Length: 356
Ligand code: IPM
Ligand code: MG
Image 1 (cartoon, rainbow, N blue to C red):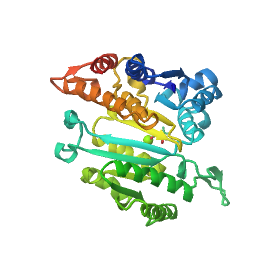
Image 2: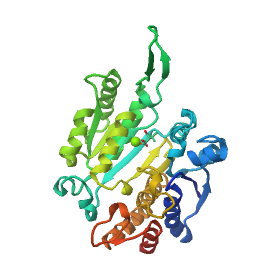
Image 3: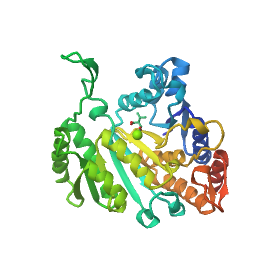
Image 4: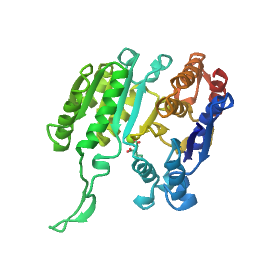
């Protein structure tokens, strides 16, 4: 069966890093893995071509695909557009449209890059956390929302934090399943001391836990979790949380590794269809200069092979190719250290393709 992959280069450095990820996948394709790539625009690129950040053209291609590989979206030239036309809305739109409720954001520190973190090496060496973020609910999508003039004539903004039982159950199952395949420790992050939505979240997670007696479940308030991630991040194995807390904590966790250019992510629906993208943004300042680090995108392609196509061997092969290149001293600018071999985005791609 041919793997149908929608490719959305997006904005900024998106096209450059996607090019390198495709080169790595082409190695597998040339060896006989049946893959079909279809390109479509998303974000600012889509707005320029179609007047919408997630146009029908792209919707059709993504709905028909088994997996979507995305570069990045956004750029300063789009910041003043009406809210519904901004690149970020394209991203939120595709998540909702494809039902991508489970966002997996690994924060892994490669031993070769232990000095890249702003934290002491002994605090972060060997770090390997998986953040499971709910992605299609919470205050991001809750209704009603908007800006209005209230009864006393003052303007106000408002959003609704809401989670249904089925939404919490399905993300809890994803998190417990992942914990079972890792260190069997799951920390559910909430603000149950203040917010009913997350008190409810906690109650449901405790109920789902009955089906996973082997997993050690703990609970933490989000403010404490933010602190513990800096104080002693290695206490965590898998963390599960709602959309807004997950947005914030995953950025924090990524910086423990010091190299956001290395972190991949997967967003999955109920049928394991997934959108795969680097955790970093579109970096408009270095776009078009062949300076970006393509590794997060290449690792996202590896996650795609693992989670949507169940091909663990191919995923590991890509990950090992990257480890070899790092061990050999090749570094893009974002992870460069004295004494290493500084390479461009495409040269990093050359090295990884060669080490495949
Ligand atoms: C992320 C980003 C997005 C989010 C923005 C760009 C809409 O910050 O993927 O974490 O808030 O989900
Ligand atoms: Mg974010």
